[in-house]
Image (cartoon, rainbow, N blue to C red; front, side, top):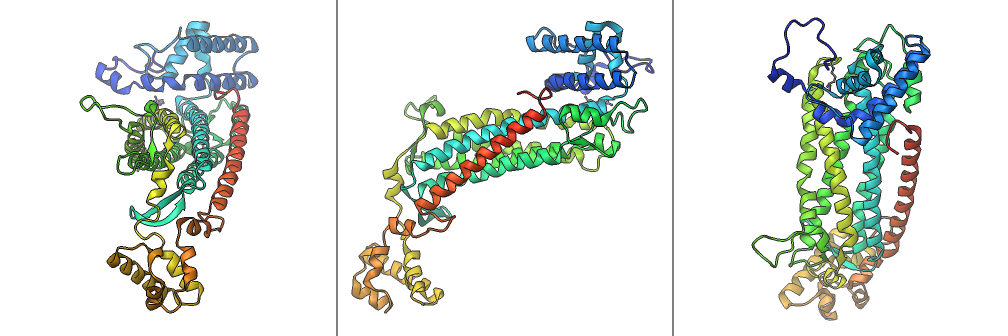
Length: 475
Ligand code: ARG
């Protein structure tokens, strides 16, 4: 049923109808729409636009409709333009013409943005919980590998030895920032746009503050034109999701590399791998590759919405209907991707011998030589130069740094003494980096345990927000 048409002589052309239609993708807003309608209903009864008895009929109608939608016995049909028209059709079929009264004092313009905000609160919180799971998987794998020494890379070249737990848990810190961004998003986007009507508020004066409170929002927008025009919350959500996508792509890239025959740092479980249709021996790290590959669409979705919003006139313009699909896509993709990446990490078998075997290759201990001299008061530039000469000496003589004879050391620099040898092993190098952020197993363990506590606090914050929005979002 169309929500408009009184002033039209002719029917919409089929092509126009097809272009205009959004119900096939905005139908997922139906549960939020029902809840917003229930709150709105109370406000209409409160101001006397609806009698208590009519209100009771409508309330029952909305609840019955919600049940039918849940059971799948009511859905949109070919004639519905969008979720709003489908819900109104449903309400009219439940309550007769009275069903049309719910439209008083509101417009699709404030309704759609309210539904959409509630949808995003709900789904970003779900994504935050999935991020917690992934952090937990990375951290618990990390705690099992505190003493596994790995080559640390810069420029994908061996740089310095590190604890492999630090390599794994570095991802946890970026994912924790993503959760923090979601909570921060929630704080900033906690004003209700409902009550803005088409753009100017409503002369029926429903009670926006009251409705906002009932829904769980912190207050209402102070400008009704801003309220119906604001899609910052959607753009910010898309940025957050794009950032998560980028983080997942970096995890993916690492697992692809680590599971290659050349590295062989990790065996990815069969459950998170795929085979080849022609090469029977192949086991490909497709979960990791898809984590890497999907970052493109997350970034694309953010770009899509920003371009829709650029220079858009204020208040509602139909362009704004283009705001939802990119968001739905990013949400759907993350809800699919995050559990797969978590499963891949949880079930991954790291191979300590292979991880450690190259930790000192490529003269990763050269910095130890330079630091040793610097500690003896040699200017670092000179110390660096001498350490470089030690590497050169090793390369020309086919030696490792700890194999340079004592006399040769003295010739390279008079302050290079025999006490240097005890520093030239990867364990000592890793152990010596004891600062809070350093790579010593103790530091890494403390950092992981602190992060786990932080994540617990995030989990509590997420449950608090869910409780505030209870009834409006899924629990
Ligand atoms: N389907 C529309 C959207 O998603 C709903 C709002 C339509 N409002 C209007 N005045 N045409 O944006």
